[in-house]
Length: 504
Image: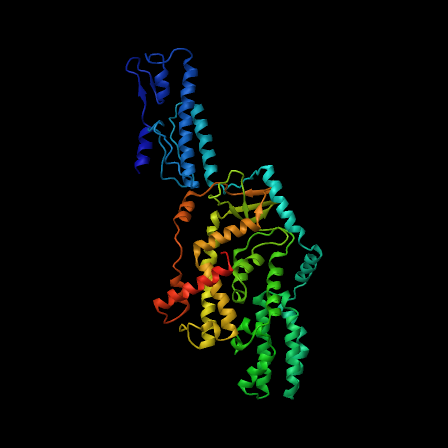
């Protein structure tokens, strides 16, 4: 309201010369009119135009300051602007544009005012600008050699074969048809001694198709088969306990783990099954021969499965985040003048539009790391508690829990290691930054556009001020009835053990 009143008041203001009664709404005009003894000599019209242009530039400076403050994180408070005319009027309560006040003294002023306002409005309301990044030629040569060397290690024929297998992925409903004969034989046969053969055939045939599906889809296939088997066995009046024993014969140790089927915690998983799972994860995620936009939901889904209990987090990141053919969609861009202690320029591929790759900055991986710690860490904690409870029927802490069975020795222990790595938030972020620098340094081309190239001052401060996570609190989430002394002892033992086998 105050600003509106000021604007309305100024529309009624005029200037009048006491000597010659000359009137004008423009103070420039008053200063240079002929009666003014202080008016400069020479070409008065030219001087007036210059003063007007000077005043206009001061207005522009304030506009730019406003735009910078509202649309970037650049700190410009330290810049000395005391010499700028304090009488310039700029409304602070703006929404879609910056209203400016010019005295309506001549047509030239009205035209410039209108054009300037339209220019400013477009600047503020348009979408974020994406720009190209130029990298010095010597850096390009050095980095391209590394990428070329990495690509040369890949067997192109093998990649093509894997690609074709993936493209031939069968729908869950279609694959069910392939098992109809086996399931029908089981249903029609009344001799239980023959069930073992049918159930083993069902398991082996299903495992051959493991690579064609995500873990989630494959788990659904298993569940469907179990439903059919249990229904068939119940019709034969087979006791429930016997039914579960028969169904277990149709499942491999890995399959029983994927769906947490009865007594799965007493099975022993084979190395071949683990290799099969890792190959499947790798093939479905990083063997593409073209750039694809980064899908955070898909990335989280690919991490949120039983593989967290069988493989190191480093192994999973290598197979899920990076593309073996060099088409990475999470990258680091190195500039020649970057300081070693100011590594921040990480990007993910947001989209591909009109032949242009659109990259969005994830400064110091704050977004990616937060997403992993907020989603995958709770998932792994929940999984650990489930495996532990299925084994011991409770979550009370036992100092020798990892020596009880293969499940606690391998699965639970691997889960604990991954929780330990991700749970140390600051350490994990540094690890992931170094990993992307190692695997995905990127040399921008003419078709690459980036939304930001400069550092985020506020984010840099958050990063520098960040303290390490109290892992004792995470241990308390894993176990019930664990004392402070037991937490300290467990942490000390795990840290000593893990530091010997990892550089994270």
